[in-house]
Structures are given as structure tokens and as C-alpha cells.
Amino acid sequence: MLDLSFEAYVWTKVVHLVAITAWIGGLVAMSEIFALHAADRADPAWAGRERALMARVVLPASAVALATGLVLLLNYGDLAEGWLHAKITAVALLLAYQILLARMSRRLSGEIENRPAHVFRRLKLFPIVLFIGIVALVMVRPF
Image (cartoon, rainbow, N blue to C red):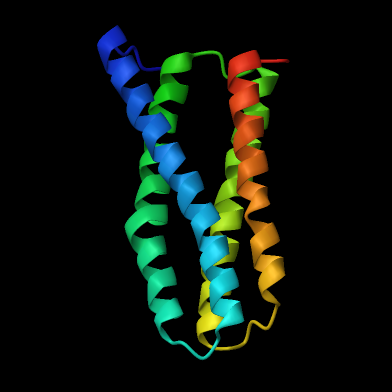
């Protein structure tokens, strides 16, 4: 286990929260860009926008969020609490969602993905609901 000073702990938590916010925002934005891409499949610029958002926002934010989350987890000490297991499961679901979005991006670029725009707009609810659940788990610690 780590034993961070109070100042190091607080700054780690600040970076973690900022990274999570950027990560969730990027995942939501990806879904909206997919919807716009699906509505205008003839414009090749959408593929570049998707790649840029994934490379410049989503991937770095998720990496920082996971790294700082691991530091906070190792500093916490009590890994047997149920809320923590639920939070880790929700984070794993966010990672799976990110991988799904990366695959959808490649499929949209190759014109293999043919789902209508409204499907992609509904997809953006998934990270929002998980984010709300994660915040509730951390703040309330119900079990």
C-alpha cells in the first residue's frame, strides 16, 4: 500500500477528477460525432474528427484517470469493500465501451457500420449513467 502525504493525495484526486471528466466528455462527444457521421456518410472529414478526438482526448484522459485511480486505490488500503468492487466493475465497463467506440469508428470509416444516427445518439447515455453511478458509489458507499 502507498502512504501519500495529504497534499499529494489531494492533488492526485484533483488530477483524477479532471481526467475522468475529460474521459466521460470525450466518450459522449464520440457518440454524437458518430451520429453526425452516420447522417452524412459522404463527408470523409468525420473519420478524421473521430480519430482526433479519440487520440487527443479520450485515450490520454482514460490513461491519466486509470493511473491516478490506481494510485488512489493503492493509497486507500481497504480493498474488500463492496462499493469499491462495484466502482471497478463500472470502470471496466467504461473501458469496454471505449473499445467498442474505437471499433465503431473504424467500421464507420470503412462504411461497414450502417446503423442510423439515432442509435449513436442513444449510445451517449451509457457513459453518463455509469458516471452517475460511479459518483454515487464513491460519495454514498452503500455497501
